[in-house]
Image 1 (cartoon, rainbow, N blue to C red):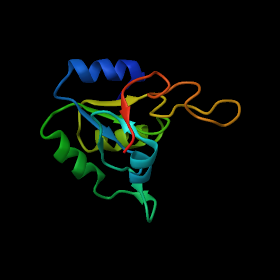
Image 2 (image 1 turned 90 degrees about the horizontal axis):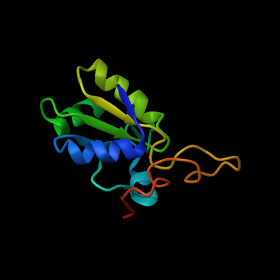
Image 3 (image 1 turned 30 degrees about the horizontal axis):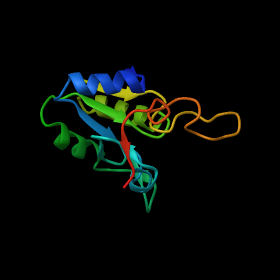
Image 4 (image 1 turned 60 degrees about the vertical axis):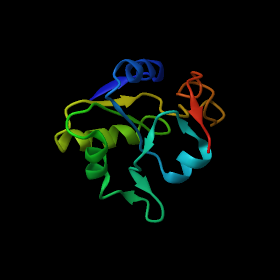
Length: 128
């Protein structure tokens, strides 16, 4: 798995049109916190059980078709690493993780979006 900063991921997604951009956060995060433009939601862990999605790999394989690169993002870049490792174990060859995720690391006062991340870098996102 290769790790990209949010700006590198944004550039990669615009130069590699066949890449699939997957947001692995929960549906609630995707809808209420917002999500990167062009990303699709395939939760790694979601309500109501908060267990690893048993269909995660098959849903990603469907979205990525045969051999399309997969770029994963989560809140801080941690869940997406675990999801990426599972995808690699399942045979996907080109898996990328967005470092610092959508909201970034916590600052000294335990707030996000103040240190790094997709939103901090001013990259396009939507809140629906």
